[in-house]
Image (cartoon, rainbow, N blue to C red; front, side):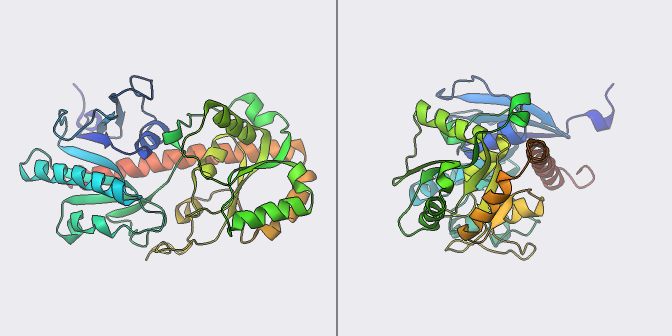
Length: 356
């Protein structure tokens, strides 16, 4: 007979209604998903972690009222980045509220892709602390609300909406010489620090040492060809330049880590309401900094020539060590997030004597 410890004490169903759900399920929890086809209408998976059995459902066919609620604890993954997404997210919250009121659900947590300016006030009334029913909120970007009690920062992760894959490090990724010192493939917005970056690269002919492909307009959808080129650039560069966009945190940071290309991150706050919380004082990117990310942080792209000069003189052996350190750090980061996520759910959702 199984001992009490070995029994699965908590059942949690994850409703993936935003692409960041795939980062949580596949990259953080390391769950499998069936069918593999990203275009499938309905995809699902199961995994055990800690004392918890997780089931995951996602896809366009997951619609309020048209699927079976298989656990009395739910993690709802939502996109709150813009008004149209917020309208859709609130429909899901109202559905969850009805299930709570009719005692079909006991506990709700939300993982939210927040606004890049941290304008997330719309979710306030749904939080338990404000008289609502959402007990836990895991929120992307440096929200000042983070308190490590019921509100936690969550990583943006890789662009699963563009089908960025799970990357398994191999011998050549770790050890082969790379053809370029750095890369930047992306949109250069007018009057942005990205224009400054392009200037600095051209000034010293550094663009000859790096893989640079700038475009003037953002394209939400990759073609297979453009995506292959992007992955190649990450794989062929020692460093990946990560200028700020609307927010400092971008998918590129995590995607570079996946390929062992060190992110060179522009460490400046962007306009909006994001910033230091009561317990973290290192914004932007407080979560990554707190977890000891081995990145190169710059305040200004004028610092880049000196960094690239140093790179030219770095031996392959040094680069291999650094790549290993980055890939190992990223693996550890995801494991830590998994451990933290499961612990928080168990401590909150299980009766007090059973929490981890």
